[in-house]
Image (cartoon, rainbow, N blue to C red; front, side):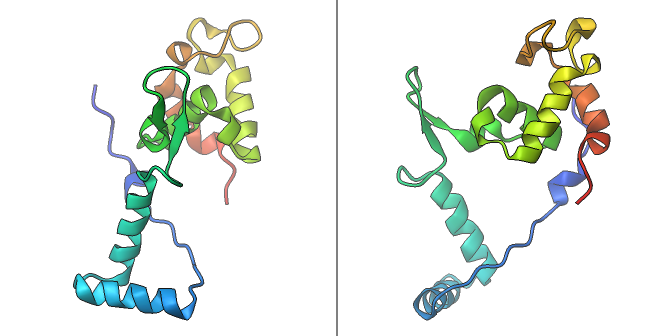
Length: 144
């Protein structure tokens, strides 16, 4: 079944960065050279850096594939699914607030098949009711 349109898809985040004169000049030149706005150049550079072997979003594994693309492994359109993916696959990367939300989810039987939560049943990906979690997401996440 297709997922409904998600307003998160349109959400953009604003960040501020401080550049030294040389880097700002280089960014300006690159923007002019490629006839692109600076934000397009910066966004492209960030996206390209995700895939680099040095400093990219790769994690070593003892099983094939030996290098895993974290962004590909964890990304989902729904923020509730992103949090669940992190909880199941890479909980060590969660912030304290994400861990707190994840612990609430793991303890609530309504999000799990058979209505059993930890410690009565293990929290595994195949047992999570992802649609129920997505429906409750706004109630689980504290407002900014």
